[in-house]
Image (cartoon, rainbow, N blue to C red; front, side, top):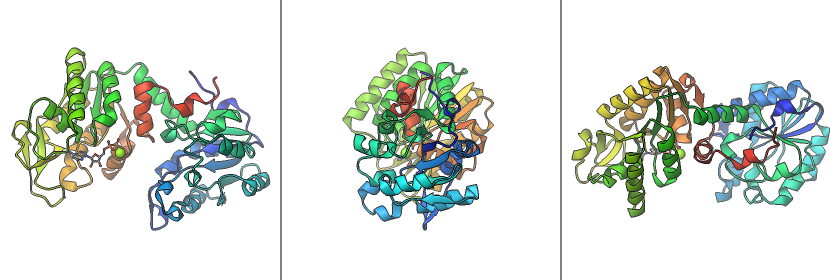
Length: 394
Ligand code: ADP
Ligand code: MG
């Protein structure tokens, strides 16, 4: 259902709470990669130009697992101020009287950043009391955090029960791109899936077998499929009996569907899980006992690249190998390069996939790089995200 966006509301002079995704990597107390911060600028600029009083809220890392100090948002506020060339007031709280008072003092066009939302356990619990506290200093809520919209938290769903809630520019663009990708894909529609686990991605694989023309499989997940086909995979990372059962079932579904499910024909194997390990390229029928597959092989990469070149549209999630180690990054690199050169529409989603793309310096050559990995996959699976469903209908 179409949702209201920033364009549907008058924000002048209003206290606008914006849920952004500033979950950025920090290094030595500084923002190491500001992609997610710059992605929020269109919404922030829109609000500034119209004289809204802007209050930003985000989570950062997993402070609930200890050492919250290193997850304070001060470096993020400093970076944002630098990018915007204007002061950004940083609060040490998420809600309460101090925040209410500070928001009252905001002039139109001024910006404030609240403390890490996950410092408050009520955030993830979607506790209505937290949402009510936040509503005390909010006239309009804007969700611009696509990457967390698959989670029903206080700052994505709870708050929408109190104040008029609309989509921000970034969220709108994500929904538009992914929505049209699913509604009427340009064909052939090629999906490239890799990454760590099959079980994480079962639902999305099933959905893609209905939607796509080719599903090209790489990453650790291909070994569970190869095992399910009866090949031996040495010490490759595979999932337990259940994972193999799932892979077998998916192969069955694929056999009946018009979508081809393509597995690697060659892989790079290593005798240890480290960059310095001995490694070689072998056919998938000849994976030696005790060796593990850490990347797709060059023949497979070339075949996948051809499919990508012929595609009308390509969606990619999950690295083809352990791209964090240079000797096993070539398969992922070949896919990234093929996508960069492709004539078809290219879309990439997934935290590690996007990180890989960035290490190859190719992210600007994609048509759309989704800021959300899990959210993009859940959108593909079910089409509905709680944080989006909760926004006002158009
Ligand atoms: P994304 O974040 O893009 O959705 P995933 O989180 O599913 O991707 O998977 C990324 C991880 O998968 C990477 O850390 C990568 O090292 C790992 N991986 C890829 N191929 C293999 C493999 N053959 N063996 C072990 N790990 C792998
Ligand atoms: Mg990941």
